[in-house]
Amino acid sequence: MSQLASASQLRMSFVRWALVVVPAIMLLGFLSGTVSGSGEDNAWFAELVKPEAQPPGWLFGVVWPILYLLMGIALAIILNARGARLRGIAIGLFLFQLALNLFWSPLFFGRHEVSAAFYLLLAIWIAALATTLVFGRIRALAAWLMVPYLAWLSFAAILNYQIDQLNPDAERLYVPAASSEIGV
Image 1 (cartoon, rainbow, N blue to C red):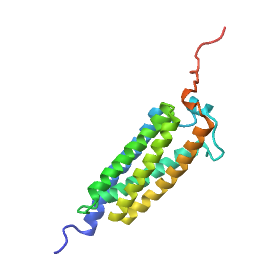
Image 2: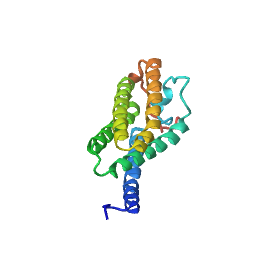
Image 3: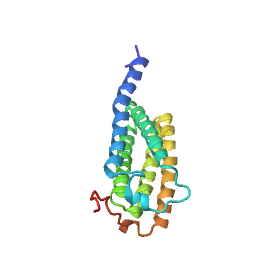
């Protein structure tokens, strides 16, 4: 017998990785957005002038879970590639770009740092591209699963830039909290 593991054992190893990694990434993405108050319900964001290309808010709630799912599957493929020469570097790059990604919502929606969030998006894009290229050296499918994420990051960077241009004082925009007082 020349194999260390059968095909079914390798498949089950991938499934185990995916069952841990995919929900973890999706949960982290959800927490990042929720903690920072991201979305159309954010009073500060609602006051900003939006570019014409701004999609409806519900679309972000559809796209991001799909992207996190694809990213999680891509990472599970790499984690399952035991013995691959660049595996450690690929995992490190993935975790780095994910950490940057998770910081974007708190920076943009929480701290209202629109310009800084744009530059962070550029860093995320570069890190995600590097991750995708290294993934491709290990498993082509893992790299292809990252392509929609790169495309969305490109679109998000354009939107972020346009919001920054349309709202030069966004960082100083004050939106008073809703009052619970009853007028007499």
